[in-house]
Image (cartoon, rainbow, N blue to C red; front, side, top):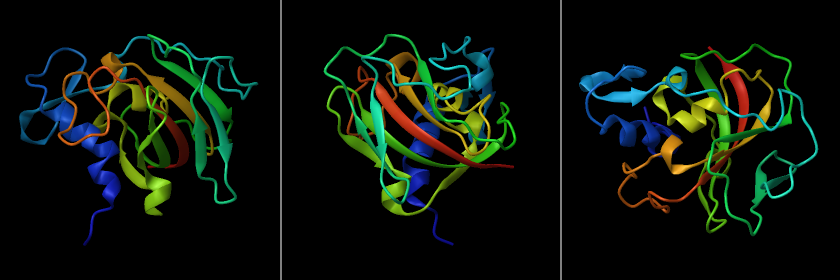
Length: 188
């Protein structure tokens, strides 16, 4: 069975984080004994919206959707936030994503500093499925607490992203801020 390329991208977040070393409090052990920061290990996420869509925040990336739902992210000519930011673009009415859930999502990853897309399940034409504890903390925090059918945009500073564990050949650096648009399609 062919694995979706998403397993090389967002779940490459898993592989990059799995190379981090020993397990500390707030980390979960993955296959092979490596550790991955869990979403529960992060501090409270400052939400730009409390679960409800609102007008775009000045100085924050904006999103336009194509007919197929694929986003085009426009990054402002400003410095990125230094903390993790989550903005709800569309509120779903399905189940709430919990820490540790397996989710199916469509996503688009963009580098704040360049405005370039570095990964997209929409471009591959196939959603990705993974556990919330298998991705970088910032990506998980863009989903946990949201409902199925929601779309979020997340600005992830290096500390909540890959940090010094950027995958070889990645189109971003350890100091780049990453932006993800995440459509939550299913839980379970």
